Image (cartoon, rainbow, N blue to C red; front, side, top):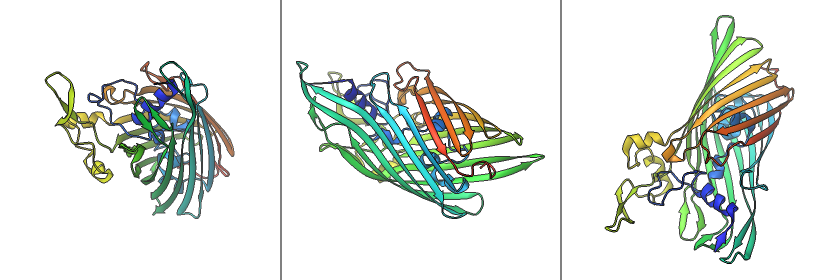
Length: 388
């Protein structure tokens, strides 16, 4: 039986983290998970700095990057984002994201966010091209966060998440698909420190977010997939060259904390078998994978390093009204080969800010090439307090 391109994209995108290189199952060096949807950065501001957003000053979209940031922001912030998703292969796929937080007092804050991916219609056809079934595919997640500040420069947050994936139901090409769901949690810390230097101050921000700690996904009765448990470490450095101008330098590093595919032995006929030649068995518990994922690569320390993605960016703010942003994202070619340049603009007319971003890949096979994101934010009182 045959499926159309939407299902092909869905299977590769959500079982192999949107990686664009096609490998054989045994030779695949990509760290694979289910629910790669959870790793999608939906807002335009973070996208325009190539997803190096940990060190950006606080808005509602911080709930995705590092929820511990929200105790350092304005009392309230609301944001809505939209992306026409994978428009090169699908005209009816859309990604939406709504997030909001509110500070309960000077030290505590709560936040909630909803992310929804509409994959459009999936058509399942038989070998003769006849339509068997047409399915409306989608995925969504709902997050609730609680953050608390400890002292003046340090905060922590806990996030609870519910995820639902519905990319098809039935057996096609001997692949059984079922809707599935999971629960997960995030643990994050964040620090913001002002540094005095002559007439104008500077600030240094850093944070760590361990996200998507949770149960496995069961797309079928015979196989369970890891959630994309991710370790994000990031920082930002703000230069206040003048009271009305600010330049922020950003750096984020990510690592999936799930099993690396082992290397399998070959039979005498050259085909791979199920016996592991080097590496660790990927069929292990979530807890075991979390603590062994830093040293389970069959290629040793060099391969472990190749599993880190690096994102660098900068944001220039003029009078806290006009913003120019850019960044670069790099992933090793053997681990997915996502590489792109990002750019974006922002216009702030208090309490409304509009952001737009554009991604230009350096690899032609990147599905998200030439994609744009749009975000509308509402932050009452923005600009009345100092930048964070």
